[in-house]
Image 1 (cartoon, rainbow, N blue to C red):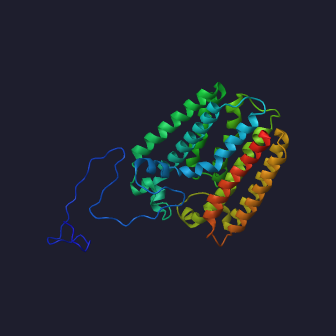
Image 2: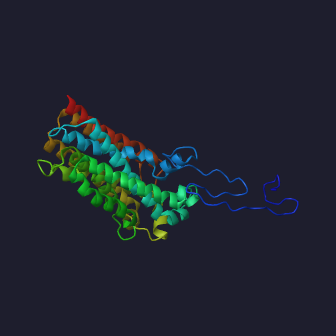
Image 3: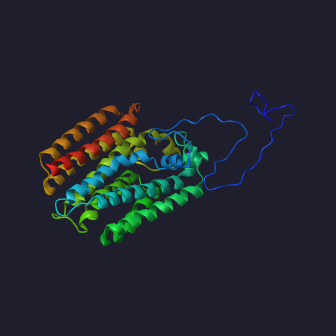
Length: 332
């Protein structure tokens, strides 16, 4: 027995331990209660298997880029009918692809995450979820993504392995390039054209609107990932992890984020012109521009206290505003 003092010294000074058999979802057990770990932002409370899977891939972050995939759907509605079934398949395909990419990234980075004080309490480093369970979930998510793509149309099915390969390889980008942020950005960026192709099964006219939509999302995601990487500058440099912050410093990264977000707005304006969106879309862009300006007021190279507000809140709201502007414009 463990003594009431909790120091592991009973009358005989010994603590008996038993090793439990491993199950798919089994967490390691200890003989004394541990201090509760601090919970990261945008995660769910609880220790059920479902909650652990959701937190593994930061499920609430889906709201960041999903509206841009739906923006592609709204654009496609100008040339092809949109059904509830197709919208549901787009949402399923996007969510499954994101689950596979994020889960794979957690598996690849689990040893590095265990060394970083900011990430060491995540599901895999802390042992709350086994690698075997994570691999099973990632495999299932990848299969669901390909299946959903196949149910949409032959073009989406043919492109699904290419998209899957790109988003999974992102997990290794930080080992050989300082521009990993743009790799991540394009991983989300393909969701916009994918939403369009899911409805039409064919490329856009004019042809350049889909590349511009992908560029807008790429710059948007890449820009805020520049900012998010600020908090890990010292750790990344010490452990040989490459990023724009490591290469150009905090001030250089903040400047790069501003440039990328300016390009985001320029691309979205060009998309509106090429796709024929009108005044409501333009109003959404004005609100998005104001949100981006406010985001950059919150984050300074020497003050990261408002980083979570800038990263989690402003970016989620911005993508929704742009999507709603396009949707209202299309409906009215």
